[in-house]
Structure formats: C-alpha cells, structure tokens
Image 1: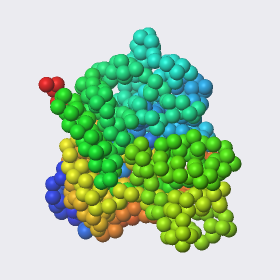
Image 2: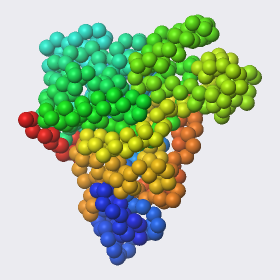
Image 3: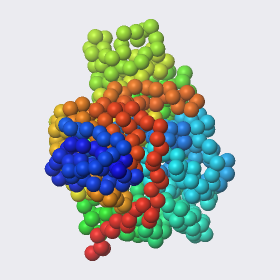
Image 4: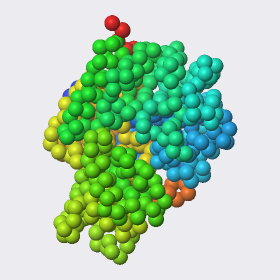
Length: 577
C-alpha cells in the first residue's frame, strides 16, 4: 500500500520537458511510481487541473539561526521550498570556541545579515562548539532539507581570535584553519564560503575577518575543499555589486581551479541603466570558463519587496558617503538631513556612478510611504513621494527627507525600483538562458525586517503564467529544481523520478502567487520581520511527508541535514586547458 497517491496531476518533472498527466505514488520518503498508477493508498489526492513538480531548491539563504526558533523556515516552506543552502557569504554560527567568539558572531550577523540581536541571544541555544555539534542540533528537528556551507569568518575567529579582524594569518594559523575546515567538511559541511565585499562589516564597524585574509589563505582553504567529495564554493565580493576587476576574475577562477569545484556568487543585478556592469559580470563568467573553471552567478527573477528607513541600518547606508551621515546619533543625523548643503551632497553622491547597484534605490519619486508616526504625516501612507512632492512644489528627494524628519526618521519607506522597465526585463530573460546563471539569491532568513526574498518561487511562477510570461512554466520549474540540484550535486533530488526522494509540490496554476508582504512582530524578543503567505499551494511534501496543505503549514519536521559526500556527489568542472 502506498502512503500517498497524487492522481491526475499535470507532472512537470523539473527537466524542462513538457508536462504530462500522470499519477505519482509515494511510499516512505521515496517516489515509487509515476504514470497510470493502480493500487491502494493511505491517502489519495485528486490533482486534476493542478501542477505537480519537484520541491523547489533555494541556493542562497541565511536560515542558520532562524531554524532554532522556526524549524519550518517560514515563509520559504509555504512557497514550495523543500531544500535550502545556508551558511553563505562566509557567515556561519560554527565552529565557535567560546562565549566571547559567539558574541562576536552574533553582533556580526546583526550588522551583515540584519538579524536582531534579541533573536540571536534568546532564540538560539549556542550549546555547540564544533561544526559537527552544530549540525547535530538540527538533525531530526527541521521541516525541510538543509545543506550548510562552512563560513570563512567563523574559521578565522576560531583560530585567530580578535586578531582575525586585524591582520593576515601566519603559515601556522593557515594550517590550523585548513585542519579545522577539514574537520567541518568531514562532518558534512557542503563547502566553503567567504566574502571580500566592502559592504560586509562586523558589529564594530570593521571589515569582517575574511576581508582581511590574504589570497594565499583563501586558495589554501579552497584546496582543502577539493579533498572532500560532494563539496562546493560560494563567495561575495565588490564585483558582485559593481562589476569585477581583472584581479577578482582571476581570483574566482583560481578558487574554482584550486578546489576543482564550482563557485557561485550572489547576486547578478540586471539594470538596463547600467549595461556595462551587466556585460562585465557575464564576461567574467565566460573568462573563468575559458580557464577551465566553473563560476555561476545567482540572479533573482522577480523584484524583491523591501523597505527602508533613515532610522535604522539598511541599503541607504550603502550609498556613497551616506554611511557617515546616517550613522550619526539621531539628533545630529536629523540636523544634517535638514542642512541644504548636505541634502545637495547626498543627492549628488547617490546619482554618481559610485552608487553602483544601489542606484536602483534612487527613484525617490517612486517611493511609497508606509507607516507614519506624526500628525504632520497623517494621510500619507500608501502615497508616492513623487505625488506629494508635486503638491508641495519641491524636489522628490527633499520631500522624502521632509517626511521622514517629521516622523523622527521612523517613517517606513517602500522603494519603487528604477529597474522595473521593459529593457531591464528583456535583459533578465536573456540572462536566465546563460549557462552560468542560476535563479536564486533570496537571502531568506536575513535582513528580516527589510527584505522579503523568500516568496520568489511562487511570485515567479505567477509571473510566468499570468504576468510578463518571459519564459515557460517548464523552464521556470527547471531553473528552481534540477539546475540548483545539479550545481550542488544533490543526490536524487531536483527531478520527479521513480526511486528518488519524494520532495514534491502541487499547486494551482490559476492562483499560484505570493500574498501581500506584511510585517510580523513574531521573532524572539519581539522584533519584526517581513512575511508573505502563499496562494495556490495545495501540497508540499518533504521526504514523503506533507509539510504544507492548502497554503497552511503542518507541524511535521521531516527535513534532513544534507551532508557532503553522503547526500551529495562531486560536480566536476571543465578540465583546465
């Protein structure tokens, strides 16, 4: 007898092939039959008119902490995600030597990934030191499958202590890091992640430890990765934001070649107003391929809902020369923002080429006013800054500053991105077909009160079916199932196939979508996070067990820790020419 029988659904198997009507039988954690299936089942579900697809795989998340207070990884689970990769950008919670190091990691996560300190202190046990012990805290207690990279920053801190942020490592320290990385990969770490991005500073405002490392250290650690089966690399750098220098291209290729593993980076932002950056980043991929390396860019297929504030740290702090102004004490900051000379300077710097990828936040007139906190701003919620500015007869940017100053900078702002134009979408559709571009980059689990990337799967499916329709449904599903499964070497996942794991989603093609983005104050300590429900998600199975039924999460925790070499195979890169 089968455990579950999904009848008469349109099966889109993840390979990109055209869908076909079939039944799918599940027993235990496996798909045991696909076709016209006869036989009894404990539960039969009529999927007539519905799409049956592999569970979605999110290749870039930061659920490392959230899983301890939210083992279901909401809201990704609601949007059909059955497997995630976390520990990206060099940031993990293990290994960790002592409470002093743990406190450093917590405060680093607050700054670089927007995780509230109260949640990290109250919602995470921190009762581990080794990477193996960290993974053991997750096994059997999670609602989806989790593969975890080993973060460079934690390695450096564990070996060098406070000096990890101050200097390059000695040969002995590099050897100690290599030994520690070997231990972590032997315990099941998926690979090695690092960052050299100028946007990544720690809780003290200093560059995070990996940014201080010499290239020789980086390549030595990549060599360690190549000694373990089923491993991979991930990094972030300045070039991921603003276009790669020749040195960065060479380093990416060298990292991939040193490990003989693929390297992926996040995120390829496509903007028709910045075509040179886009072409630079695609050319970087191709140059790495020519050297025999494999480098893959992640890109998002939708515009991610996000909010901003002049009160707390956000993307606006990344505008050129804005950081020193927005980091001032509140009274001094407000004084500066009232100063006409400062206003002109900020507007000019934001419009300069130095803004890079953050230039997409400069459409001041497109900003929608969210929650307000003063009588002066009553009635502005839901209106665009541009409309208000025209009424007041002032520049959009100056109007925006007037509004937030009236609220003591608390105003919630919803940017209208400048890259939501036909030319940019045409470029995105082209990028999706590039052999070294992969869909992903949600950052789910990070930037909790500022960004809502987790629902990208259902949002994109809706857009493919009822919106811009820039690719087929079969192609979109392949991009979020088979493609990431094959990049990471996930064994028997990513495709609906007899004998493979029963990670399955069933959705209504007429209604599939993400709901409205809302702010929930449900984190440990009461902090808020952006959240969106799913629409049209009829079933989600993880390892053969239902985890979502009719858009509602179940209590089941059938997920597993995907360990390198055990649950993954080695993905070979092209041989060096």
